[in-house]
Image (cartoon, rainbow, N blue to C red; front, side, top):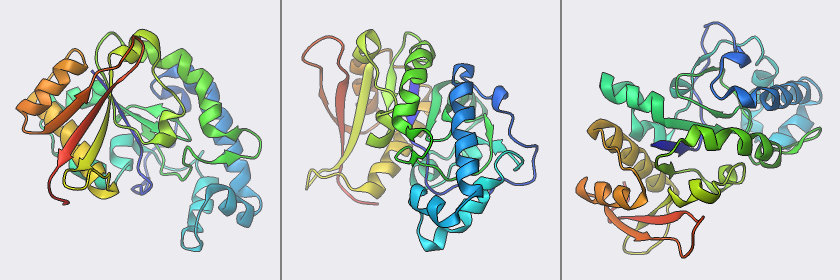
Length: 260
């Protein structure tokens, strides 16, 4: 099973560890694309601060993120699973998983990123600010920049098992499973049952809990239909829609009664 996660806007501090080594990151087929984004981002942030803030969509209160990006090549790095914080990652609670579940997390979780493309939770990265929705002056829209290298690398990473896609729309634009891979992909929405609406906070929290449940229980559904049954056995209320034709992903709605 491969689980596709969005990153978090909020990130922990990098700390004083050894700096980033791009070529040590997982999915080495993305290295050249990573180098291009990193170089462009650092150059942007080392120049006109106001322009950088505008391009990155940062408020006045986040001005310090520009300077942080300038120092990315030499900043300390930590495992991505420690860098990404926020509602989904708090609910997932990687640090509190038992040893066996942590091994499953390392093997199955892939976090998408505007800067790195996609990383495993053990990949060592510095704290940064660059969402997938950014358009860098020299590269254009990052989702478009990542599309071709992702198409080369991700099908192999997906293997021959289930792909559980929990990404937000900005990150799905960088890679959409196609063909045979799409047929074993399940996308998930979390809806407030009484209103049938997506609410950001508990949408993220529930997705984090779902992943934690699957990792903790050692669940290994082989396809979307099996995933539906596993989630129901774990106590989730799930509505599933199988694709109408081959080469399309399954759509799953997880219904939550209370917002928490």
